[in-house]
Image (cartoon, chains in turn orange, green):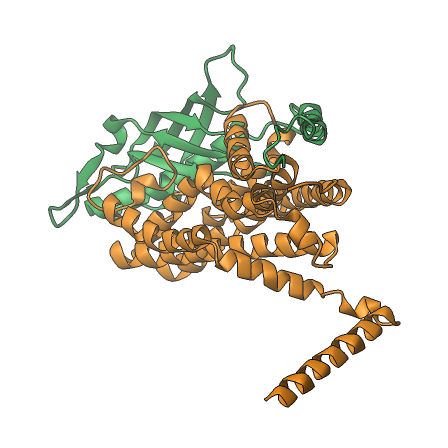
Length: 301
Length: 157
């Protein structure tokens, strides 16, 4: 027994010494974890977050409940497609999309992204993760990819649940178009899915904005709330006349680009513009966010 | 141990970012042309109304009504002669001339709310298009598609 324990200790000591020699030698770089490893940490941390799980669960459960509640109500004709909610389930899916633009999608984008950097400040854990020998660039990339991936997953769940719920509860009648034409359900279903897909670009733009505010504010509450408030402000500005080109540069304008899919002569110019605008916002926000994270002093905590 | 220091030190970059965004916004506001214009609205609302009038005629069981036979044309104006005919607002009026299901040429005044997102809501005169609900050939009350309707147009057309 004693002999075995001694042997084990000796073996361990030997292997530690070997690793130490190895590290001190020419392979020091090889011990730095890859960005993929850092990404795996971030995904694991997010998966352990109760908020993330409840958010996905909410995206799955809430839309069919809303559609079911609508079936007994007077149509909300002040929102586009509101007046048609009893005529076709596809109209319900578009009404919920139009409604989600107003604050739900900016909120969805920022609930995880606005928290992902600032929670390290909130928990005082920057020192811990920065001493894990991963570079700040790797951590920034991993957190960005985790937030963007999660938000895309949440949008996918929300869209699938909305469309499936609407079709099951209200039905697959032809969809009234935005030029007075009736669109057969077979043609309309892919268009409705495409309309939900046009939310990807502005959603990722809002994700980048939330990541930036998460880095700059160092406060999880501010990181989540500020993008939602900015989204509201942009929404409010976009209802004004006379903005012209400036209106197209707002992130929220991309959320309404789907209208062109439902006119008799389809137009996709706004979808292309929304993609370019969201890309501009995303690149700007991520660049500033990365520089801010790289330059900052991590002390205390 | 200053985990939750007030963000006074951090206001620097945040303010700079907001200032740049505000400057770009101010520089582009009012340039590039108005999205909501009289020709765009007119070209959108006339065929839309024609499509909906055909649907209404089908519900009422009146045959032989087509988009071509209706031959709808629109003339839109915003807020009277003193207001320029561009921009979003609830004060658009579109006069639509069309041939009704009895073959008579009619002119109806439609109240239109044009939204900044290049969509609009139009309400027709019930004297010409009927009430909000109409009775179909089987005696069932259904929504009158031409009574009030949403539409959209291309802001780059």
